[in-house]
Image (tube, rainbow, N blue to C red; front, side, top):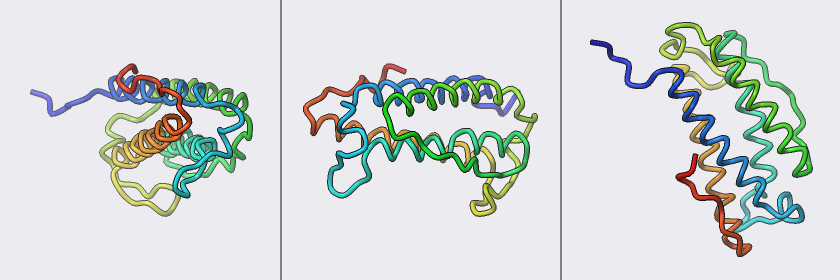
Length: 154
């Protein structure tokens, strides 16, 4: 009997489902509010998406290569730019995913020289961070009178 509770492919599919939902959330934002609207002093959603873009692929590259280098990417400052970068990263994740070495998610590492832990935990942090920031985007959309995408449609 195996102690595997989720396969790598199931985890990739789960994350990509969240990414598809986050993409629809970006699409739902009016251009004029994406980088300017905030609630309670939280960062605008466009800036939150920029953070997600700076985390996802560099983290996966670190897991695959065991080399943790920040992409140093400057986040786009337009809706079209965010969506293009999002789509490019989604494709890059699918390309990198099969390169995760067997057993790698159970190994200890220090992401970007700062965050120690099992690599599964580091990856889950990136996924959880996306969900958290997407939820902030939902609050913004609702405050703007816009119905956000159904969260369960991934």
